[in-house]
Image (cartoon, rainbow, N blue to C red; front, top):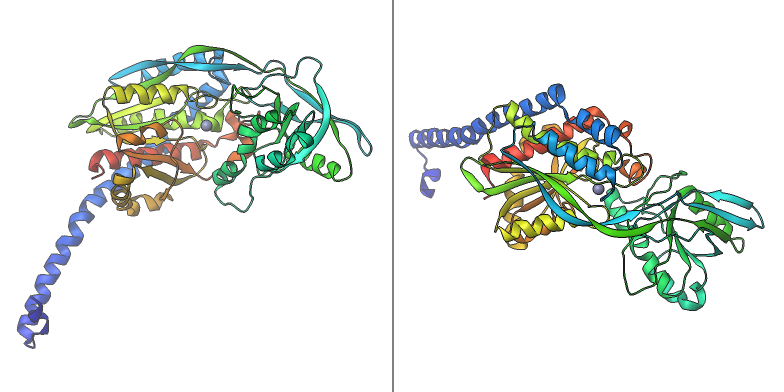
Length: 475
Ligand SMILES: [Zn+2]
């Protein structure tokens, strides 16, 4: 064919131009036609979510009628049965509960703390909260000198001589330079999760951890700590960022003694449930597309952004498709996971049951980063398949970009992480997360902290993703 392009006769050149134009029209119009159809359908998804969406009312119910939902608590049980009843009305083929045994932790009465008889400040209260899974101090509390560290390694270096009999104060802030606040959280949270294990090994009496947030305020953040049976169990509390700054300044001027009192206790595990709704695929029922979030929350606040919004998003997907007359070709499953916060029992039970039945999750999408303005999806998968999947979803970017959505590679969600071995695509819904850690694991994480419109846009974005995966597959 090559010589044709070097032809000097204008006649044959014109013919070539016509042939090229013809193929150009075919090449452009083929995909353009279906992309137009998809563009219209995505528009319909967003229009419907923004005008007839129900997810905001579902979130209100979960936050205000039910409230906090720590696994094994009465709130969590109420949430399970209430969500099952709600799902029964959403048009699924089947709605069922999947049992799991979750660890049970009870905070008891709120913790308290104070700076004791300080040379410069006298006695001042501290804004503290007990960390999840921890033991209490006993009714009399603990009074001991504070030793400040910025890392787990620093405790190792100080050793028993520097730590024994003291309260170890972990005070490395989340890195404010990281635009991805989840990366900043991930870079600091080892102090909360593992600080007490390292400190207990060297004879510390308790641990006080700077709250996991970029914000400077008076609100302490709870969260889970690792439970390790081989080290003594010592109390661990979190302190607000303002108080952490204050303590650090005081330590620069001399010894600081702190009094802490907390009342947590670990109770025997309890039977609880994941709540699952399923609609069987018409032509590829063996390929599952999962959308989920976690139904449990911390016991303070109302678990609105963490993860009531993920539950509301997940519940909204199928009703939106149904309203638009779209019946999934692949099996769609909405999974409300239990016990993400302090054990992951629901996730583990789900993976085990799924693997036992030899299921294949073509895609799993978790929403557990709050209900703020949608930015896109973070994707991961098994090495042998991921590159192809990522290339495939990237062809849909022209459809998603008008809604501000893009893709990044990275983590998906804790509850779905165990499905990676099945060889499907795992995705995390990514909203703007600059303010997420203002609320995360605090009494401030309440219904009013969620914006209706942003929540509905999130539900629409996830629905759009499910639609494209269902319609085109990933190969
Ligand atoms: Zn969460």
